Figure (cartoon, rainbow, N blue to C red):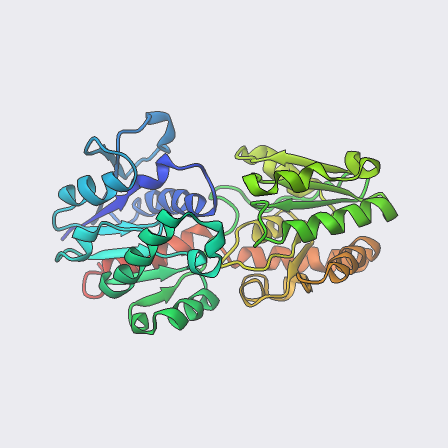
Length: 365
């Protein structure tokens, strides 16, 4: 007996950030799993899209449906083509018609950042999510979030979702990429990968970078897009350290990103808030010692394989970087522990557990 599954492919029309990385990695891992699960028939439905944006798939059939784009496509076109199949929505939102219908719906709600950091979102965005997320948590057959700490945070706002909300950690390095041997640059280099936003503690990291560049000659590389509100912050980097602090912008080329991880002496991630971040595990898989903010989600994700600091205290961040750069034995221990931690996370395992949630009890063949 076959099981029909439809994947909401609207994420393929968006720029690649953490949510899109999650969806793309799961899509590839699902496609590989279907080699041994022939009873599953999976289709990827998208709005009209350039074929170059769709990953190569062996077992999952891609179909363009409808003529609209964005939320209009998701709410009006997509549900008309779902039928009796199980619908998986990996990108926080889902069609209301499907949620109110009879077919099985599973949605990944990565976090509630629109509630935690309302100043970072437009009024329209907050209005949509404040209506849609509670409906998803009440009506979806299963809601996946990406860590136990985020599950607790969501239940703090929506306790009624307890029975249907499950936590499945993200994977780590992309499928097909194995652990990388570090090749550190000649000069001490600290790397950050992620959005350069206030909630990621970018202003604090930049302050620490200026101090370490000035006192020690440490070089910093920041990879990630710069929100419009932070452009003024970048313009005030002192001239005497400007050549020590480089902004590489958004990097989606994996060869370049892996080279950055491998060449850094340590990876700095003193974020104020995360759900299940990808960069620290990617860094660990590349043999780069990780310094992380001491918050619950990073403790859950990184375990004993990171050096922790107080993200709200620049002195603590600076001291943590110096501890890793100055103590070769400590850095080596973090590197070994990091390899072991990275092995715990794979997109294959994430996809297997997610498929079980999509199929549901009684339909596992």
